[in-house]
Structure formats: structure tokens, C-alpha cells
Length: 305
Image (tube, rainbow, N blue to C red; front, top):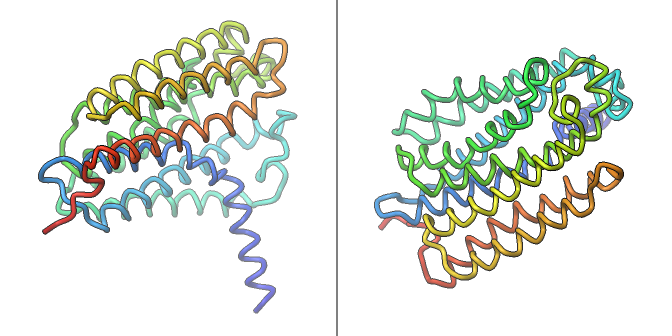
């Protein structure tokens, strides 16, 4: 029994490594902040099952998309020196298991939308949203703008959260979506610079592979400039105060630092920019929003009764 449990836990750990579960941190804070802003609106009451639905939908949708990516990219990953050690090309997990995991997560995502009833929109939109998320994994085969397909997939999280809680779309989640779109697109461009030569030789579509690393870095910088603009829009539309605005300035400095440590001649610190700086930015935006609302004595949760 102990051996079976140990093997099951080992497989679970490998599956979490396959989908890089820790990277859920990039989009999750935006969904949570969108929920807090929605609950802060008149007539939108906090329900524990809504919070559970947000967390479950985020985890299962991202897990399905990442697992699907590993399945369709397994041959490409095997040829790339940077990725040949991933779970499928290295034989750490079997293809049938990962396919079953993908299907299970996709089904769990759809079922999780039932938490938002009597609002039927999340369930109705669940399949189209899921197909869009999965479609990112195929984008590198036909468009250089695949980086922004990824960011468009992630930017759905605050919009979907808002729709699930309010049944409509308002300015705050749209500005938040803009932040995610330009932020994720920009840092995915930085990350993709590592594979520019491989993509070019393999015939895959990417901006670094097609237009070169310097052009990709310039576009990433332009995207991150637009992040700051969208954060200002979020500050205005979300009714935040000076704490959040000061945080926008701090995030701008972090983005400048992110670009300062990466250059066309030196990509050795891409992982630091990708993982460490971006984790701080994502969690920082959530923390800034909560602290700002708390200091202004705005209700964080609109509890019933």
C-alpha cells in the first residue's frame, strides 16, 4: 500500500511539474482582484461557492491548456536542446496518461462553472473559452503573433471572473485584461528569444525567429510600456487611491529592470526576468489593490445581510 501511495504521489508531482503548476501565480491574482472589485460593487454579494468556482476554473483551465501544449509539442520539445528534458520527450510520463489528464482537467473546468449558477453564462461560454485556450498550442505553427495569443488567453481570466459574478462586462476588468495582454505578451517575447535560432531552423513561427531578437526586445519593451498605461486605466476605473498609483510607479521600475537585465547579446538572465520579476509584479498588483481598498475602508467582500 505504501509503495502504491508513493508511486501515485510521484506521478502527481510529475504532472504538476509537467504543467508548471507554480506558474498559475501569473494570472490567478488578476482573477482574484477582479473578483474583489466585483464584490465591492453594489448588488454583487460574496458567495463562497463563487470563490471556489474562480479558483477551480483557473486551475483546471490552465492545467488543461498546459498539458495539451506538452502533448502537441512533444516532438518539437524532443528536438530542442532547451526542452528535451521535459516530461514527455524524456519519458518521465506516458502520453496516454497526459492525454487523460488533459481531458480530465478540461471536463473539470466545465463542471466547475456550475458553481456560478444561477448565472448560466460561464457554462455556456466554457467550451469556446477552453477551445481558445487550447488553440494557443497550435499557434506557433501558423502565426508569428503566437506570443499574443498566449496573452489573449490569459487576459480572459479577469473578464471571465467579472462576467461570472456580475453577468456583464465593465471597464475595470477590461483595463485589467489590457494589463495581462501586454504584460504576458511582452515577457513571452523575452522568453522566446532563447529559441530564436531553433524556431527559424525548425520552420516554427515566432517574432524572435522571424524578425530577430533585437526587434523582439523592442516590441516587448513597447508592450510593457502599454502595461503601465493600462495600470493607470485600472487605477482610474477601479476607484483606487494613491497607494495603488504609487505601486504602478514601482511596477514600471520593475519592468525597466526586467529589460535592463536582458539584451540581444546576453540572454542568460531571461529566467530571472521571467520567473522572479514577473511573480513579484503579479502578486504585487493584487496586494496593492487589497491594501488600497482596505486603507480607504472600502468593503473587500460584499457579504450578504
